[in-house]
Length: 167
Image (cartoon, rainbow, N blue to C red; front, side, top):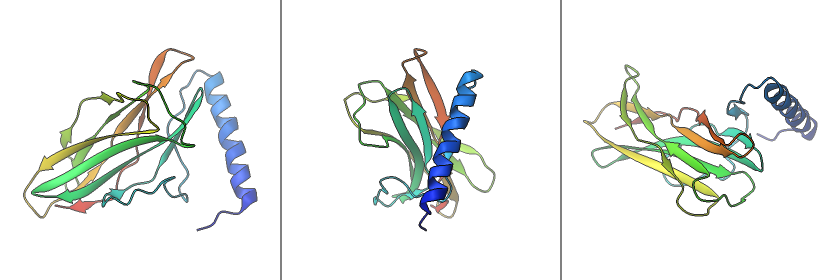
């Protein structure tokens, strides 16, 4: 779907005004979703991804997303964060955590610890595997952390839920 230029410009202006308002009231901005947009760099790696979330910190603009795919004997979930313009970020600038849920009861079946980038790069991902019997549906919903140099601490943002995958 193509977005008319005037609507896109209006959306960007409103996002920036909201971000300024939130920061002025000392409320940290949440990951923002633009529902009709596709991923900035749609991975073609077999994962069923959800919508991308958009995050701005001083000096960097990111997007994060989670995906899941069927794997041998189970499912593999992934949470990824990348800069929106390909800018490289330094070591330990971002982190990711993966959570895999069973659809029928919403149970959290697998969660990783926080892992942070160990090299200079423009994207970072964390994966997790869950061994299960076949026939269940699962989805992935992770979190990312981004270093905010103005306040010398990490911001944490949840990614949007991936699509469902049957094991």
